[in-house]
Image (cartoon, rainbow, N blue to C red; front, top):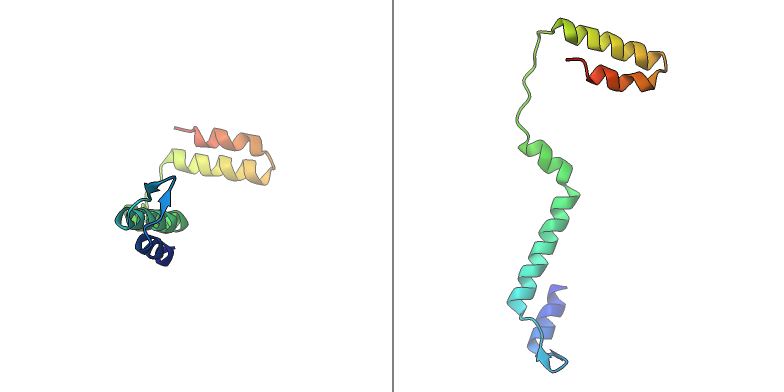
Length: 90
């Protein structure tokens, strides 16, 4: 695209008698679009780079143990409709 923009700028094209957008502005737009494309393609990588580091926790509360037991019991029992209830345990 950029070579086409340079070529168009050198030949001073018009649309309906009006000059087309200048090369500097077209180049800036192109840079923005390419940056957005890269950001969209690597969004998962960017989120992992910028996420705070996780810290391991060796302590488990009674609620943690109860939620684990309920989750695995519902999962292995094929009762998928009960899984959201596990999330709601305080």
